[in-house]
Amino acid sequence: MQNGVNFTKKNISLPISRVRLIMKSSPDVSSINQDALFLTTKATELFVQHLALSSFNNGSGKETNSLSYSDLATTAEETETFHFLTDILPKKILARDYLKSLEQMQEEEGDF
Image (tube, rainbow, N blue to C red; front, side):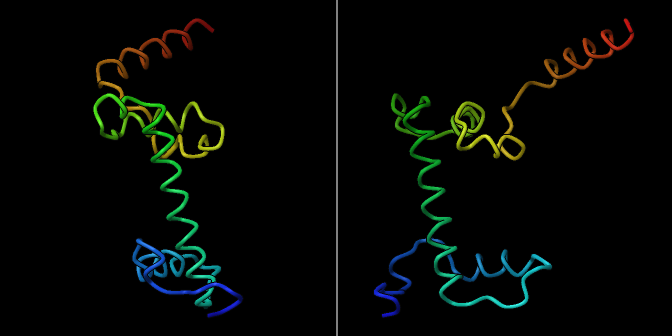
């Protein structure tokens, strides 16, 4: 037991080795303290859980008892807390809709 907290692998679901690998991929990180690794892993787990629950509660998940990519993307777009995720969780659009909006943008640029 350290600092009044029992640090065991039973307290987390994410693989610590994967989190360590991600942390070490940063050029700014030379070594990783075990306490920092555990806390980062636990914080990540809690964040993912919060995102999933928010997406489930605000999306179509309640009706279908499932969570979809669309629910996650909508939550990222509409909830200020998760807005920073919009680049990695963009709403999916059909190719024809994208091409149509691209044509409209080009027409607008041509008007200037």
